[in-house]
Every structure is written in structure tokens, then in C-alpha cells.
Length: 389
Image (cartoon, rainbow, N blue to C red):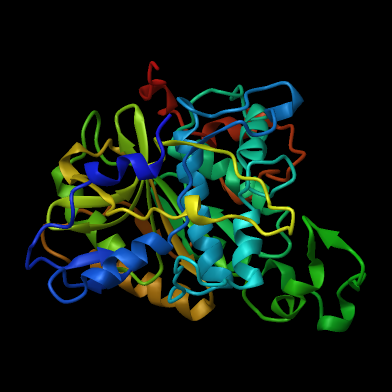
């Protein structure tokens, strides 16, 4: 079993280059902002394989080593959305510094136990309803679909999660989704919130003021296939531009057979967090405090050539307000004009008549309409194989 401490000296530092470093919409210089780069990377929530957690489903695995890397990458990209939602993009984690309750609320949503919103237990068991047995590999689209369903339980975050299928983002669909909670005529017509109701340990009132706003924060995930067996070079510039956008949540994907969470790039290399390290499961201390150091990658992040990226990925964006979404749309339209950059997906105002609409499907947690859901799930999962241990 390895921990990040034993791996610390195997990671290369950042190259001394004049090329800018982009991390989730922030631009840095290696020469003048190296500490800021590393602090930004360390502040991302880092989820790895864990061992000795409560058995999934009561009798299932107590470790996800060898099979859970894409599930952990899904957790990381979604955790970044929750960090942006509750703490802001400027928030930083500093070792030993006391963090806010909101930080621990976000972290607790991913802890390896059955009643955390986005735990490995919830993701694995929700996947069973989508035809994925516990311990089976997920593709990027499948983990995105499962996270979307789990987010319906998370009343504290009150997110609108949209997964754009068929390489097409339909603006009208997203606006309808983000404004769907506000059809009642004013707050008085909305159901009252019972003061003593707790959801996952958090008071539901935490999100009440957001219900009075006109836009639910958007998590937009776009599953893509950028080539057959390897990434088409024509998409590389567009992929780089995604990391430059302030709304960027990064990319989940990886090399063949091995999933990573990509948070930026420098030159022709992607910067990523690697879940392939097994750490012991974390339990809250007697005081109820959660030891959190193992959830932050405290060595320089990994890098790999963009050309090595498996073509099956999911790109993520977070738009806290309608203005954020409008700005994102504007940037995507501008990106289509960049010479030598082939668009990875299409942005349209309304859904083409020949498309089915995934948002009208029953994607609630108790959905049993598996046949209708099937076409929206990742047909590329079989391209990945579980690593032999």
C-alpha cells in the first residue's frame, strides 16, 4: 500500500518554462508564481483509492483499489463544483489552518460511508440500477449520470446538473433546468421548510435563501469522444481553451485503463490529480473533527502529454449565476472562431427536432426505466479494462 508521502519524491517539479500554467481558469507563471500554483493544486480535493471503509451494501468491498479510479475522478470534479458553490474559486487550503464549517460540510459529502451524498458507496450502489455491478469500471459518461442522480438528494447545495448528450449543449434546456424551481409565484407559495429537518446532517435552511434567487447554480458535464483510439490533434487547442475559462471544473478521463482528474495544462502537457494511491479510510475523531490532510495532494501534481489522453472524456463547467452561464456561452461561441481549433461540441439555442431530450427522462433516484436511459449512458465503458493487481 502506498501513501502520497511515500510517492512524494517520485513526482517531477514544474518545468522551468515561459509557457503559462493554467489551472481551472487561472493563469500563472512558473517563474514568479510557483508557490501560488502549488497552493492552488493542493487546495483541490483529492480523492484516491481507500481501504478498510464500511462494506459497500453491507456485504460488498471494503476497498476500491483497482476498480474505483473513475468513481474517484467523478468525486473530484464534483467536489470542485461544491467548492466553487460553497467556498468560491479563491478559497485555499493551508495545512494546519482552521477551516470553515462549509469546508467540512463539502468534505463530509464525499466521505467513504453509506450516508454521504457522493460517497463511493452511493456512487457504486446507484450504478447498480444502471447496469453496473459493484466493482465494475465506469466510463466518464456513466459516472456523470450517476452523480447527476445523487445530486437530487443534496438539498444543501441545490445544484442544477445538466449532462449534454450527442456533443450538443442546448441553451434553452439549461435555462429551463436552472429556473425550474421558481415557477411558484413568490416565496409565499413555496412549501414551508420545517426548522428541525436535517439532510445528511445539515439544516435544510442553509439553502433557503438560494431558493429565492432566480437561478440554481449549474454543473454542466459534457461527455465527449475526441477520436477513435487516440485523441484527434485537431481538438487539442479547444481542449486547452476549456481550462482557461473561469467556469472550468476540469476534465475526467485518462490514459487507456487508468482514469485521472485533469485540472490544467502547461505547454503540451496536461496537469492532473491521480487517484491511484491507496490510503486508509478516514474516520472522524472523538471530537467530531475530520482529519483532512490526506484529501489534499501535497506534492507537485502529475503531468502527461496531451497526445496520450484517451479520447473518451467528460468536460465540466460550473456557472454560479445566469451571468456566468451567459459569459460561458459567449466564450464558447468565440472559441469556434479560433483558427486550427476544431469544436469539441456544438452550442445551440434550441434542441434540434430529431434529438431526444434526456432532461425529460425520469432521472429521479427511484427511476426504473432502464431501457429508456440506456442510450444516454456510456457505450465506451468497454474500452477500459480493470488493471490487474
